[in-house]
Image 1 (cartoon, each protein chain N blue to C red):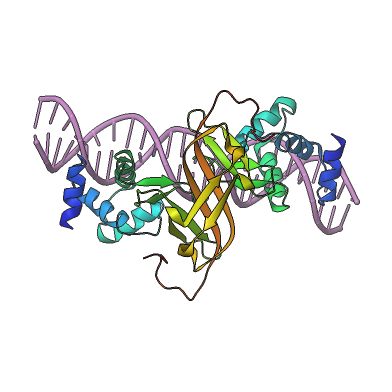
Image 2: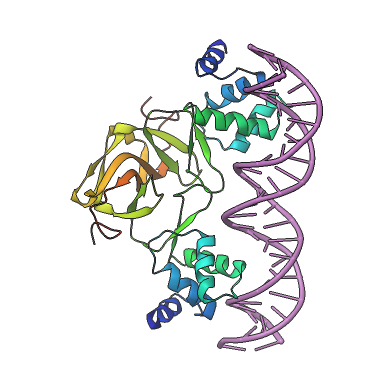
Length: 140
Length: 140
DNA sequence: GTTCGTGCAAACGGTTTGCAACAAT
DNA sequence: ATTGTTGCAAACCGTTTGCACGAAC
């Protein structure tokens, strides 16, 4: 993808083959993959890439503000390419993680939160996804 | 503590010395410790206890519904003795985690959440705690 | 030729597991 | 005797680090 190369270059990152391979996967999924899932997926099309290179690329993307690392499942941190503030829904039967738009669950901070300067908040919803819906995001 | 022994026994757990030592620490802190922090604290008063015993006790407490394991900081899961649904505030300067009552941030689910059967939700607030407050919980 | 990127392997930290000894019932 | 509990050590898994080679500027 041409614009991925421009995207990386625009952020001051040299668009090396491996970096682009990692970027192509991680910026085009909403599956919230762990680093090892990224590694395995990228290896399908780029079998020579090493674990360290994937970790380097992901950490670099996080440091440059292209990607976010999130605590959403036990055992491994996951990567989320959606940089705008938003929330998450976790299907407790499948473990699948869905993005939820920020305004889908606005909170009303009450007096109990006096004493806290809230810079951001993140809601994790848990439950089951109804089967009648289609597509990963009901708001798309 | 006498009632801790009764508490454990009431849940079908034999109140062994080590189990009570773990329980005494973890049910009387709101510091959201990791398993290793529990180990180190318990070892101060019970130097012989092994890592496996602490992990066993904590997992047992979680399985019996006395304790909750939470994804609140990177690197290690933390334990929370507050079983009623509630939220958390994380001070981004100190990393300290504070409990926040459930009704302190009620959410208004919007139409965007059609398609999700929400069983529970958990809000993580981030920011800074104002110094003028005292005590770990502004609602105490 | 100096910096940056890569691969490999080792190290690391938190957690889990296998096993033998022991205590409780 | 059977079951449950403990300690030790090793294994395990995700991640980080050290280092040498190679590519890019």
